[in-house]
Image 1 (tube, helix red, strand yellow):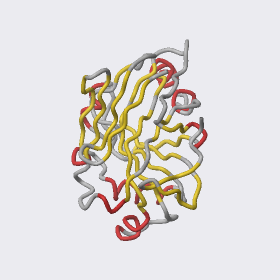
Image 2 (image 1 turned 90 degrees about the horizontal axis):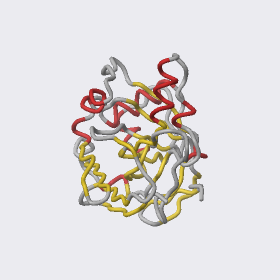
Image 3 (image 1 turned 45 degrees about the horizontal axis):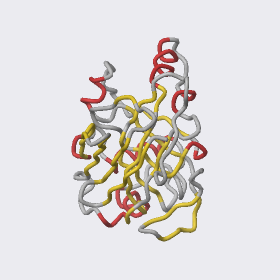
Image 4 (image 1 turned 90 degrees about the vertical axis):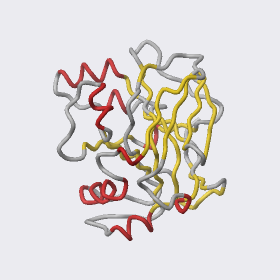
Length: 221
């Protein structure tokens, strides 16, 4: 099932899902665990909205395409368009909601593509490559530098991060994105993953949460 409509606190909102704008290596320890250099400027890539699936009822991962890695991330939903150097106030006004999400990666394929100097799309944009939970209102968090993200698999905490550890904080990150290309209402921002990524397997049971705010149980089908 694809994720076609947006909800905040259970209420359907008027704009459809847009593109998913992602930032790579936004936590230093995650860059180190994959043996990647820490970027000197934000590393951006885009997933199409067609790759997004809802977290409820479980999700599937590709078979026979190598290792599929999970990356738990704080997702930001935009409710207004942004372009060309928006102010901090404009970015904050455009944020409609926050949710936990999974950015899934075909890690073996990504490594092969990187070794050849080729783009990553095949490793990042397959159907189901973004698992998205329902959003809570943007006003839920008074301090965007203190939002937790946690993923447990089969009862074991695998990732436990906080936006305080981001190399590019949420508002400056979105300002940079909007300076590179227009952001539209319905776009989702994935803000990077903390240390602890690893492979998923069919049958894994997951708990994905913004600790103290929202918690979702799901499974790999």
